[in-house]
Length: 180
Length: 180
DNA sequence: TTTGTTTGTAAGTGTGCACTCACACACTTC
DNA sequence: GAAGTGTGTGAGTGCACACTTACAAACAAA
Image 1: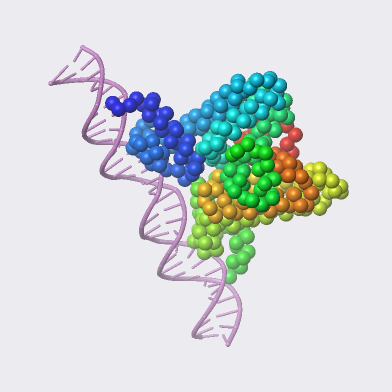
Image 2: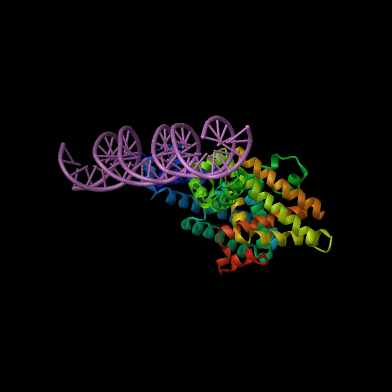
């Protein structure tokens, strides 16, 4: 007995978030996740109910990490005005997605929302983050909306690789966005 | 000779945008596109260089339609202040993506930017739209950025189906967005 | 009518991948 | 040490799908 199943599940989930983030649900074979986690494909299928179950579990882990980071960021800030807390939350989020896996996973998850189970976990994830922002920061509807709009803009910037584009239109889109 | 190859290509591209929009690049078999276009799979492969070539051509068609709609919207407006033109552009875009195919295709394309050819066509598409907004509306960098941020927010709203969610956080995110 | 070109397809081929199953090893309990 | 339980894998199986090829029919030019 080298490890417990629960510990393996955590390892596999980390590998899954990273693998799915890069190549998406359909183009990522579970052999790739298994290899990254250092175990056999067969055991991944014993630990999770199937490829879809694995993806959904990875999505839950992804959103949990995001929500936690935002919460910690909000706790750290001194001031308590909505603007200050929102800014701290944005900063914490920017820090978290510096490695891009969590950001790209969200993009991939949004692309396969035609699968009902995935649509559900995506909604649950954004519900968690949105209520957190609304409740913890005391932000207005418009502020919450703006927070998410510029968050989604980061998705575009990263997927299209706009930081690398020196042209003026790309500079306009990336201006002031915290280091993605 | 029932039709010309060029006319067929147009038919196939319309079918391709619609099919790829729903299920994405990897999960859409070209048989599905062929069936939607009413021709055989083999002929699709003669009309386009492969599945990737088909997707890239569909992306070009998609962005061309978006740019054209925005341009027409800008032409229609009476006023000439950046705010008025931007508003008209936003309205034209909202009208165009009412059927969701063009919006979902963008989401799917952004999800497969790990394929260099697709990353390139996505950048080209956004370059076209961004320079159009910047030049035609005379918008500032911040205004262009805001235009795209709220455009991307629409992607989230539609993919997550937030219009159907009656909870307050979802209402906050969808508030004031023109009928997606 | 013959020859050539373009449009179109039916029927493969090969490969990648989700998922299974029989089996083996580690560790515990009695 | 025997029996049971949890951890782990190698070797399949079957199917979906990207892409090819050989062939046929429509049309044009001679």
